[in-house]
Amino acid sequence: MKTFLHRSCSLVISIFILAGWLMAFPVSAEDDETSENGSMNLDVVFALDASGSMVYSDPNRIALDAFSLFVDLCDDTCAVGYDVYTNTLMDSEEIKSIKDSESLEHMKNIIKSISYDSNGDTDIALGLTQAKKMFDTGENNDYRKRAIILLSDGNTDLPKGPRTVEQSKREMEMTLRDLSEQNIQVYSIGLNSDGSLDKQELENISQTTGGRSYEIDGSEKLTNIISDIFSNISDMNGIDREIKDGSVDIEIKDSSVFYVNVIIRTKLSVEELNPMLILPSGEPVSLVDDEKVKITSTKSYVLIKILYPEVGKWTLHLNSADNSNCNIKQLNFYSVFITQVVPEKAAVRTNVPIEVTISDNNGLLKDNELLSSVKMVAVITSQNGEATIELERAEPGIYKGSFTPGSTGAYSVKTKAVSERFTKESEEADVMVKTSLNDGSELIEDIMAFIGHNLTTIIMAAAAVGVIIVAAVMLRKN
Image (cartoon, rainbow, N blue to C red; front, side, top):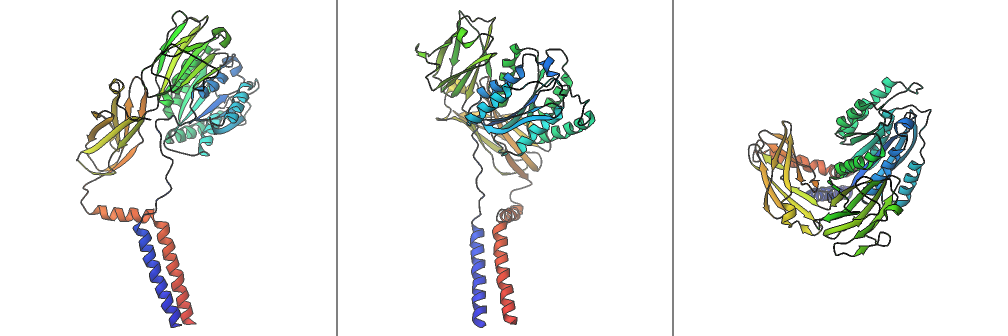
């Protein structure tokens, strides 16, 4: 009996030593996937109205072309899904990576085959709620941007049910609140060929969630609207290009351009246009065999995507094309990374330093011509509101600045690089501002944080000790 108790005590001591050793080395959670703010990282759901009123609001079915154009503009870090609704949910497809080419083509084909239901009523809240649910079931990575593109004539009308307009409005309020809290913006496109669009409903949806609202009455506006939405979501700036004597200049100013989308809005076919792309050196580029060039088309647009474009002035030759029958927009996607460093803790009324780097795949940006177009600002948010400060360029690719918190509490800092060529944002960082960093509260907070991070280890060690002590007591009684 004494031998057992002696061994039990020795084991208890060993467990305490082991627990103390484990607690000395914090157990780190598995790292989340790191942010790559030089890539698009978009998750987008299309909510498509297929009700009877759309037969008249969108007789040319341009809403269905919008999905294809947006997807063609994306890179392979993006993911898309859709739902189709009337007064009931007709169809939906969960968010899938664009890398999944088989699923993507399946989605495109399904959407092309959608018919507007002449007997279907409109329940916009149903379509938005379904889109929100699709985000709820997916991974929620903070560095990925999420958005819904809603296409409708903006007229909720439910004479045949299955619920009332009042019930739909109540659901709409809850859905918009959730979308706003989750930072999921809604970009609404109102189809208005017959002049019946309810602009106010769509504007309210977009404004509540921080998105934008558009009106379209013909296919000639489609590419401009989709490219504008795409530019807003992906932080790209579009450039309108003129046609001169059947040729278009495609200018690439910087090596940081990852790829270029050239959108040709036209009713001319690819065969009629017979596009020919010329390098800055004067050599032609194959639009069929070159792996860095991709061309896609529908009845309303032709899209040419150029990967890793050479710096200089490219030329695009188009047969039978002029500014009256073609509209051309160039979208440059910059593979630029914004990284900021701020302290996790600071004292009130003292300078809090902010240091930011701007890089591309080759390291810190050192192109003075490009950097001269960049304005770097930090947005500081607290319980007292929002403030914006401009950072100064300390050296090529490095910016510095500071802010002075006037009160204690939680602050967040996000840096934005703004240029006429692109807009990029850093991840948001939190700064806890206290009365003083030397008031003794640091030790207590660090201990509490340590316990929180290692709670599982502590509980397991305590449970093991408890079991051994109980067993020892019971054996002693026997």
